[in-house]
Image (cartoon, rainbow, N blue to C red; front, side):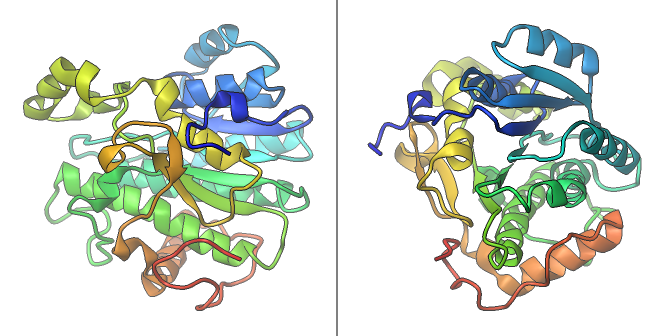
Length: 315
């Protein structure tokens, strides 16, 4: 496909079931809307069902709502059970919802809010739904990361919940780095099945509600300069949509805007930070995530050399 990939490039999605988290606003809304317009049966998995219903009413196509609060593992399990009762297959799981730069607070299960919501909630949801995807050829798990995975980012195994010293930027970076490491490790485990793939995407700098928790010193300049330095949610959703629907996309790939510094532009393949490709850390994070969520995936343990360090593309 050409460089300027748009929603016009999305293949017919009729007969496919897509679950999109955080789909009542922003990037998630635009992702869900485009999939529904191309024929998919779309589930808006959202914390506020009333807002989800209002969002669904603005979309064209088959769109339903499922209550899902990623800050509660009980809610994640309830939502997964409800989805399993409604569908016998899932073709696309879009792990889009997230929080950014929140003040220090914890989820219902005691996890640091950004790590618990952005990573652990989606980790658990994916594990609880994956067996509905494994029998479906061409099914995909797409997890939305951020360029923030490069900023003050590391997996702090000695203090994952930031109990000793909290920094909202570093905590966000950890959660977004975790999203990528989860994707790469999941793809390694899925490779032998040959049906389902895992990919990642990031929206660049998009004008969404995500910035609302940022410190005022950052939030106000971004608000003032938004027309110059950000792109619309519809443009920001394109990397996710390409990862989800492009017939040429491969497991383990990462898509982002094609403009300078990946801030804006049409989606293309991009490369994540060197730290994100550390297989040993990916596998350690996976084990810790299983322990914290008590969710075991229906896929075998990964192999250390499934794809080379520095490249997340499988053959």
